[in-house]
Length: 166
Image (cartoon, rainbow, N blue to C red; front, side, top):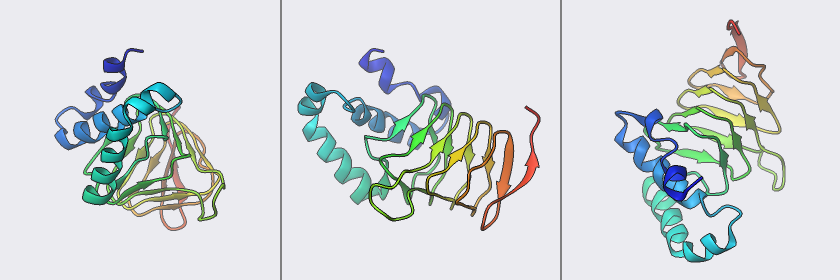
């Protein structure tokens, strides 16, 4: 995939969402460095600026090491905290005040999130868990256990309230 195609892979999913486009394009520029020593060396000033601007100025922590499939959609972005070891499938949606990562211990595995997952505002997804494909996680949910595909979950702790047709 070319550099320009790589950084625009989320463009269509963030249609009519200027802030989402801004966040995802800059994340993808930084994310392009993952596993590429020459790109990381060449873009190291950008990585420092990305980290300072997004983490310190905007309060959005999406480390460039995050593995995210194409079609990532970000609404608002404020107070969004994602651990660098989190894995996202394709066409995932993130909203503000969401935390995704391990349970606080260093070197502990982080969530693996499937394709077409819609994550509401103020959600915490913590621990070595898997979120299946086509899952909707309601606002304010605390997810600490794996969720099967085609589910709608809400609450603290999150519980399945509906199974969607596959």
